[in-house]
Image 1 (cartoon, rainbow, N blue to C red):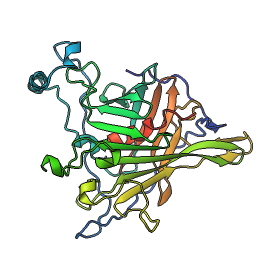
Image 2 (image 1 turned 60 degrees about the horizontal axis):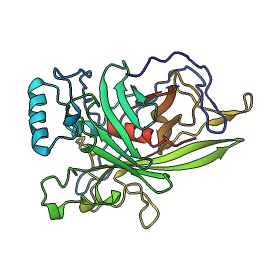
Image 3 (image 1 turned 180 degrees about the vertical axis):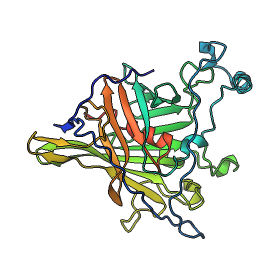
Length: 338
């Protein structure tokens, strides 16, 4: 469990990519409406949905053994049935894909990182409710699991979601190994493949380094599938005719069913000779990984913010239209930012 933050900084500075908190003013931003075109349907608008609820992590009555992780398919089936009966099973993966309800409030979470920087766990703001775990198998591949490493059903080899990076780590794509659109299709008609663009895509992030004044900062552009009027999510499946998420269309435009976000640019402060950002009263330490995301169409409307609290603890605040796994994955793409 991540430790509580100890120090509050009143300034957010960015010098060669390092950020500190500039002010503690909370701002209630106006709601936003973005329309998407649904095939053979009326143009949708943003609608909120219920927040997935997460049981605070509790150790199952029986202590897990290492054999649980490497168990056979039949043995794991009995494990799942046993945990279901005891009431310790997690929600389905669909809960991690469902966006939070719409509103001006950002929901607060913490990310705890292991000392070797390969293991990340997401907790609710009270630091008591475990949400999801992620492990870097390499510097270009991450597995996401809905169970805590100490839980009986934890198995990093059967991830709920997989994120992969390009060779230079400038592009990251989060995919669902079990495509929702292909679930009931025959094996030969499913989108599952060896390439990241062959699976259902959930998030695409593109990174670059930018300059403002005398400072430099890491920035990113993000694309996520859109939402329909009835609250249903667009299933970004190549078998449904969708191109690679985030890729421009032949005419240079962006797909109308995708929602685009971008990094909020800090501004150069002459008095302190640094780039600054407002983290809305959050307790932040200097880090090149600190950033904020906004809607492309509303550059002042913050959708997500990620900042360092202690050496291995980060805050992760986000709101509609992001889902839990989308926000978690976007934050982890910054692991190599320096």
